[in-house]
Length: 281
Image 1 (cartoon, rainbow, N blue to C red):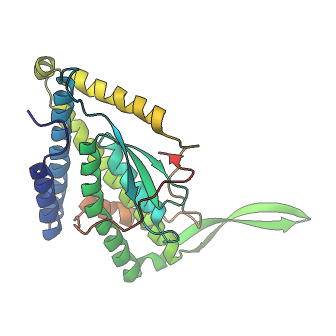
Image 2: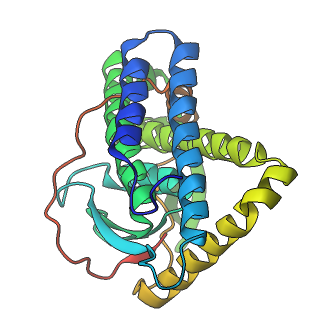
Image 3: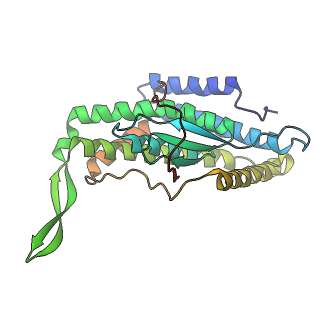
């Protein structure tokens, strides 16, 4: 049975290999298959580790959830909220809870080491693809032909009146909408793959290995750890495209999220320091 202490190096290597294959192909269906394979491998490993933890005797050292600071980017960098959205989406599909710094420069990740390792590996690859795809979209100029609905406030007879108007889409608005849709699509894809893997565990197998009980125990342990450890005030509500909603940019971001030709560059650098006033994820 897999060691319950951490993700084996060979498993992370296999995931990395699948991601590199996804990056190397121009075939959307192949890229989809490689990403799904990476998430399936991660989910199966997570289930194996949960069962292994459940079988450790009380006198043995039993792995417990941890809190880890994950750097997202430097203060003031545009788009950090969409980067956070991408990490949180990946985390949700891999049994990791998150709190977010108000500056969106860092995330507190709560979970077992093995699951957080998986999240960081997937995030490092997917972030590069998201930024690259949004750059290509902006450079293409496709967003310029679209309009965005905005609310303007005018004074009539001394009273403020709100009305909706159509305005050209600014580049920053298009980029934010694109990346928001990309991250949302990735989250749905990974969650669907995880659900499929869990559903594959037959009732007989679950009864024999205690898989269902192990997964439930893992969920309870993580929930309790998060409640005891998190100092978040409020709930993180995700990125907000305050300049307006661009349907065209979101559609383009969703398409890119479906293709998900994943990069392998390291995550954005940021100092690992204590979060101030984190928000719950």
